Structures are given as structure tokens and as C-alpha cells.
Image 1 (cartoon, one colour):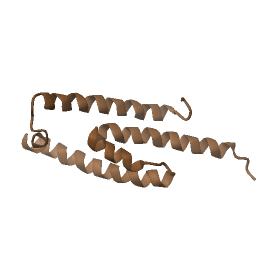
Image 2 (cartoon, rainbow, N blue to C red; image 1 turned 60 degrees about the horizontal axis):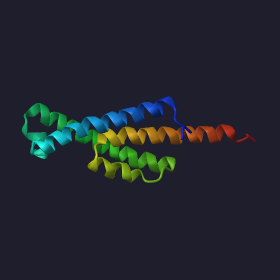
Image 3 (tube, rainbow, N blue to C red; image 1 turned 90 degrees about the vertical axis):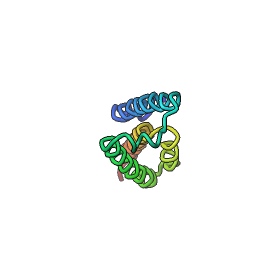
Image 4 (cartoon, one colour; image 1 turned 45 degrees about the vertical axis):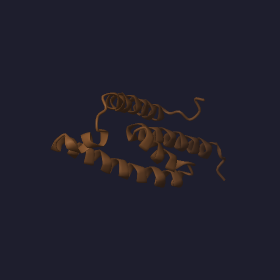
Length: 118
């Protein structure tokens, strides 16, 4: 189970869990208080709207990175991280992808160093 878990991968995993807990704490509060979830993104003033656009652009760019990088590294199911972000939060799925990417890179490094040169 601890195979290929580098300190960087564990850091990303910790950020992923913080993203999940942090976003879903507020998501549940919005649901319980019957808030207009999408309306609150853009209707609470220019600062909130700016932050919303900022995060949406980052999420789109990050989603493209996830799909391209997963293909490049041979990671299966890269699109699942993007799909899952719509059900959970990009603050959860993006660092989770980065943790799995780091594990993949570590496994590739270990395979490369184990192969005899010749």
C-alpha cells in the first residue's frame, strides 16, 4: 500500500482531503440553508464573481492538464478526475490527480533504475 508514495504525493493527497472537507462543509451548509448555490457564485458582488471566474478558468485549464498528462503518462481513467470534480470539487480531484501522477512518475523512475543499462 505504501508503494510509490513519495513525500510530494502525500502532500498532494493531504491537500486533496483538505479540499474535499473544506468544500463539502460549505456545500452542505448551502444545501441545509436552501441557498441558491449557483446564484451565490455570481450574485454576491464583484469580488465573489471575480473569484468565481478565476476558479472556473483554473478548473478548465487543470481539467485539460489532467486529460493530456494522464494520456502522456499512460494513466488510465484521467477523464474520471474531471467527471468526479463535478460531483465533489476540483479542490479535491486536482490534488488527488497530482498525487496519483506523482506515484506514476515514481514507479516509472523505479522501473528505469531497476533496468540494467546496455
